[in-house]
Amino acid sequence: MTDEQDKTPAEPLRVGVLGARGRMGIEVCKAVDAADDLELAASIDQGDSRSAVSAAEVVVDFTTPDVVMDNLRWCIDQGISAVVGTTGFTEQRLEQVRGWLADKPGVGVVIAPNFGIGAVLMMQFAARAARHFESVEIIEQHHPRKLDAPSGTATHTARQIARARAEAGLGPVPDATKDEVSGARGADIDGVRVHAVRATGLVAHQEVLFGTTGETLTIRHDSYDRASFMPGVLLAVRAVRNRPGLTVGLDALLD
Ligand SMILES: NC(=O)c1ccc[n+]([C@@H]2O[C@H](COP(=O)([O-])OP(=O)(O)OC[C@H]3O[C@@H](n4cnc5c(N)ncnc54)[C@H](O)[C@@H]3O)[C@@H](O)[C@H]2O)c1
Ligand SMILES: O=C(O)C1=N[C@H](C(=O)O)CCC1
Image 1: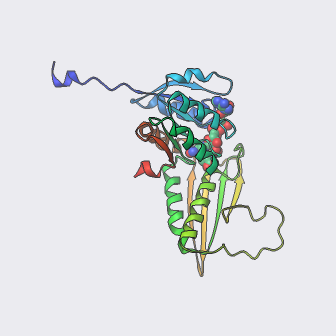
Image 2: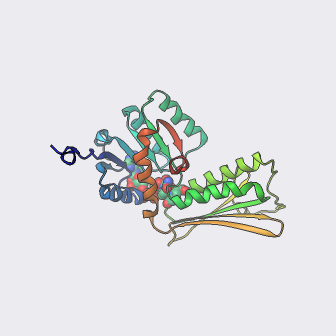
Image 3: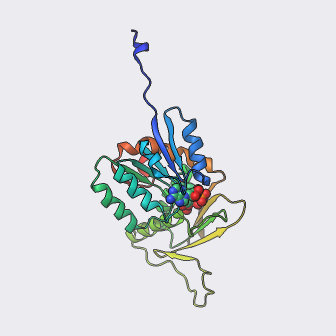
């Protein structure tokens, strides 16, 4: 047998998709199907039995914040690594996932508020800019069928900005508002105002507006199509089994 004949192709990685009939789930199934090194082992949605997913080596979850924790617990119990795009992860939820993973040292979980590479860079740029500007507000814009507000991306960005401001010794963002129609100044996430816009025609967009004396800086990212999230999802699918424990965000995978 020649060296060439001896090269047996690697078995494709078996991927299961939860939320497979949703907007993101449909896109993930297409992307997995199209990748030579991945196999769509199971795709299930609400009402389907999760047992079909037991054959998967990696599960991708794009469901809803109210069911994602139960799905994750199940995956970890089964010893299946997971890539999660579903939103709603508070620090308390992340801690709970770390606790479950502590009992399963071989299992990896990647949870990312946004799998768009441009969105990840936008969040990094915003965190970097934060220490140089006394003012900052976030405006996120999404399609009107989105269930949660503000978005996971905006919440994550606000927390990163707040951390950078605290490290730089910046005080509260200046704001003299005394008389406010409820909600007019947006949500307060760790001291950063976040405004959520919903409109038909939008997919997922975010602006971070910084201000200081005599200048402003706007950092903006736009996803016009859910295909924009797929390179990040597949990157995480391929990497997650080599990253035991919990990875939050795509930053570490991009580096
Ligand atoms: N991280 C990212 O890059 C990113 C990108 C887009 C959307 N999201 C998030 O992903 C989630 C899904 O977004 P979407 O636009 O696809 O929503 P969607 O409503 O179109 O899809 C959710 C799907 O999950 C299904 N589902 C509900 N309960 C289930 C269960 N127990 N088991 C299996 N399936 C179940 C629903 O029937 C639905 O088909 C949201 O939280 C959204 O914010 C994240
Ligand atoms: O369409 C959605 O829903 C999106 N959700 C994520 C968020 O809440 O940040 C990512 C962008 C798209």
